[in-house]
Image 1: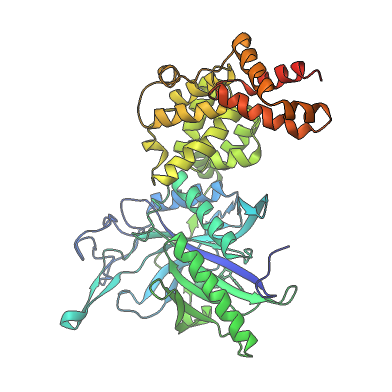
Image 2 (image 1 turned 135 degrees about the vertical axis):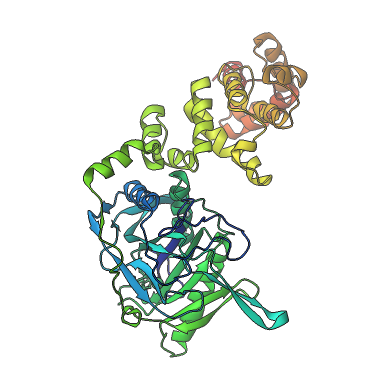
Length: 484
Ligand code: ADP
Ligand code: MG
């Protein structure tokens, strides 16, 4: 059951433009590098000079195949390029080459975990399609001289447009989907994922309806290029639509922009229909034919996918599915986990430490795991000292702190901080006897059947041992002495 907002169900579908990581453009040999001086990376094809013809970049096709394989989609054996006609100064041909009726990637799905209250649930978003297309150029408005210019460096840059079914039911779900998709495209290396540079931008189609009713009319929020804005924009849009409907105003289908300064969405234009674009097959390009042998070859050359790796972690390391998914957020995190788990032989402890203490500190310092000052070997050594009972979990956190601050190696830190657990029962028994003698009331209450009175004894014992007593041993000795 999806959660409702003021009695309305939210419905979201995403269209994402992922810029493919080829060095040259989709139909020309011009470079795609970001940030070059205007119009230095636009060749005759990109400028639509008469007599030029597009030539398909095989690297872009290969990346589309990789994406299809990564999300379990059907890869069309024959797909068609179409002209999407519209006039805009940054589109010198007067049309964009895209795919319309028959896209290269069909179906597939993306799944991820979501926190819902106390529970963690798996959510799957179905994909409708992913198609290849070219990007347009850019209009540059020089307000101070009252002129506009066109930069065609971006014209012809290869894009994969990834379209979902309207399967998401909240802004949290939408952001989780976008993050998962971002992980997939960067993991397989088909897109650099740089959102500031526009390499991964999302359009969120948002509508609301009464539960169980027909789909409402959607508005499409364009070009969301940060996860934070994505959430803010959708939340604002949902409230706005509900307010309109509550006021008796019907939603008009429209394309809107999010303004991060005001936190509001505002209409840019009413929505075009497919008919407005007068799509037709591009006669300059033959059908894109992808034989099964090509797909098989690409499959054979691809690195292990995140979901396959997660399944392997469940199987080989007996990890819960949730841990396995968290640990495969990036290749670097996965490699760090595997190195730690192999070195200490305690996969679940390694997972707990990485998802807990390590992530917490990385987040606090806004660092990637590659920058972690604690190596996998050091973390493994630390875990080894917990499992051989040299130190308690609490002491281990202090050692970890020392490792993080580069104060030394595990054993040296345990020594220097005096954290070794008291494994000498004689010494511990002495402490326990003293604490029992000093707290007769607790002893009496415990013997009278109040189990909670034990806490009043364990605390002072741990304190007197300076946290070095092994809690299990303390418990066992206490029970023996109290005769239960
Ligand atoms: P277009 O290409 O014109 O934007 P599509 O029909 O291909 O239109 O849909 C684009 C996206 O909008 C898809 O992700 C789809 O899931 C989503 N979508 C369609 N109808 C709705 C709706 N009523 N509410 C929310 N999203 C929707
Ligand atoms: Mg759209």
